[in-house]
Image (cartoon, rainbow over all chains, first blue to last red; front, top):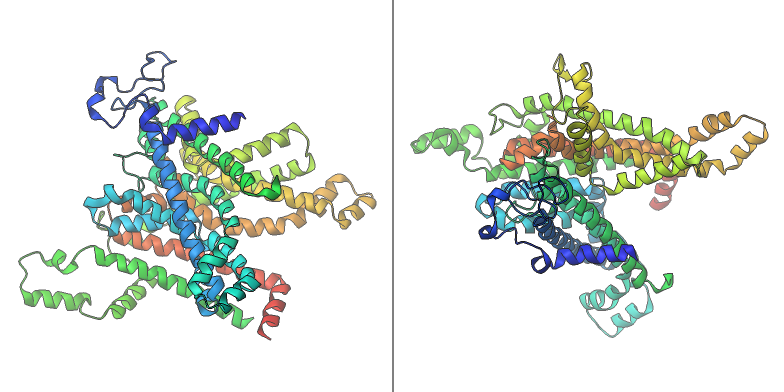
Length: 281
Length: 327
């Protein structure tokens, strides 16, 4: 119950950040520079105006966390969707068409599996940043990030879907569809796909937390979301510079928020998994 | 046997060539090297001459072959930012990363195995519960957050340990080591814990589950029936048999440690290869990036190849399966 409440507060705070956040940290008109480095409200020197204190530019930490969690969550969801589409598509084709194409796709999957996903995401992201023109970085950084995280984790989906497609392919309803003359693509996507999808959703719920952590790590390393639109990882990186000079709240609170967000996404995933699987009830 | 080995080696070479191709194609984005060398005022004749000299007039695959040839000799050109040979930079940075990685691996094994044994033998004690809870936190926290929290507690609040850098180092030939000075050892503690914590929890859980499995087997019951002491049963008979998968996983994880060192090195400003890579990404230092790509791929390919071949040598079932599949 407590967990459900935490999840609702956390995810809700992230999704509805523009409406519930006490300040708009990216509206430079409302920022008061002299309010910079205000410590949290309950310590000496803090004010109730800024509950968790402010950063170097006087931005309210609580509000930046809410906006940041929103971006973290959005990037996480988008990259999970992307790797799901990629993995399910490739797995379905590999399983249904078989032969050389199957061997080729699965060999690539094997090779990718021998590298840690976060390294692959980092390398793709790093290479993309160098290849793409410098001026457009800030606008497309998020999309590059989604692409990198998505590509780094399609293998799991592809393997699962390929496995169940191989089973489904031999079943009578597929043969029946073939007999009445439906095309290959139509059978794959209309007949087989709905039957192989349920384990995919379970993987996706587990994967979301990993995707959020990967995003935070890349942003922390400085190759993720730009500082103009900070995610939680970017906030932690920016705050990290002030850690040694004693302004601990700038980095500790976004860090704590990241942990809580990942935790509540995991809880949400568990709940979804149980709700989607009637056998467990 | 030979066919299997050859196929695996061929696959490894193919992966390396693909990574090499990606690294090579990065260079086409740095701009025109001829313009870079001669400046705007060069005559067309000079341009043609230099293009020929650099081999840029040759077809793509010849240029790629030249790149691979140079890369095999460790020649990746000059770093754009530091204007020094990339190979020199990596040789300087390699000791830092390897020392950190091996310290983390050692820590993971030295702490993980005893903790795993303890949690398996005293399943209901409070200390075992503490170990398991801590391991759960270790798995679910991102590496960089663990590093930041350790810095906050041990460097900022308590002031016991340094928060960045490698401390004083001593040069032994081309290898610089921080293991022989007090400040070097002190600087190593926090990064090694940060990097090793995840692997430690992994090994602890692995040892625990393997140990629980082994303790149920007949030969353990038999050893007990022979009247051997608990200590002898647990450590001579049980632990020995749990260590085979542990060593495999530890070997495989070595690559992961070197990869995750990127994050730890950034948190602690540890002057290793990972930090070099991150810095080169932010300034688009392509030769350094290309070299790192190839190097890290090489690490993984070699580790996986060795593990695969060892499996094949150790596990006769693999051989039978292959033979059956061939018929």
